[in-house]
Image 1 (spheres, rainbow, N blue to C red):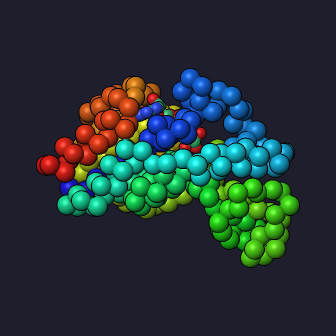
Image 2 (image 1 turned 120 degrees about the vertical axis):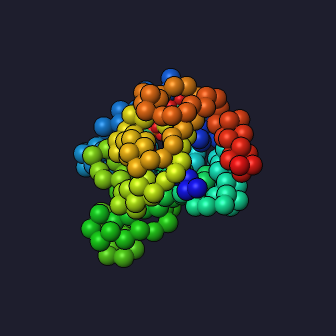
Length: 228
Ligand code: APR
């Protein structure tokens, strides 16, 4: 059985990293157009760098939680492929020992708009930084902003087309294309499960719902899968 898992901010919430759209979520406090769009970066790069420097610092201090570890165990022990796709830019899946496709980029990488080089982001990025490859000052965090195309979409489409089970964990289903993955997987015959603290905007699309905090329900769900 091939399992494809999509994770969102809810899987890292209990590691102390805030979500975006819950009460007190990041987008209730900060205008996403100013800090998470190419236009916002063009207008005020220092503000955008300060925002990601703060998020990078918080993410580097965070530790993986029981949900990240359970997913790593599933990837290591399941008798079949397990693909994790994450919308998160933190590195907590990797810190727990699993591999994940970061479709919205990674806070710990920087990239160059001119030559497309990628390198490890320093703790603090600034608009004066030079690209280590081409020397230009068109550097930016390696984050997919609103209005940009997420990474790995062709690879993800191939995996969704061959999934037997698709699970969405801790994501509100408000941001496309990720919010459309459940329909894509279902169209190709996968069973679908949503794991979330609450029902999401797209709950009706799933065959099964598991409600509760990720650190409690994900390890139980993984135990069930591994026990067959
Ligand atoms: N356990 C499980 N689910 C949780 C928990 C928890 N402890 N805490 C919160 N959640 C759920 C919420 O109920 C909500 O459905 O996590 C979801 C978080 O939703 P969002 O804040 O919208 O985050 P996400 O879906 O990952 O956002 C998608 O939006 O801003 C962009 O690029 C950013 O990748 C992000 C994308």
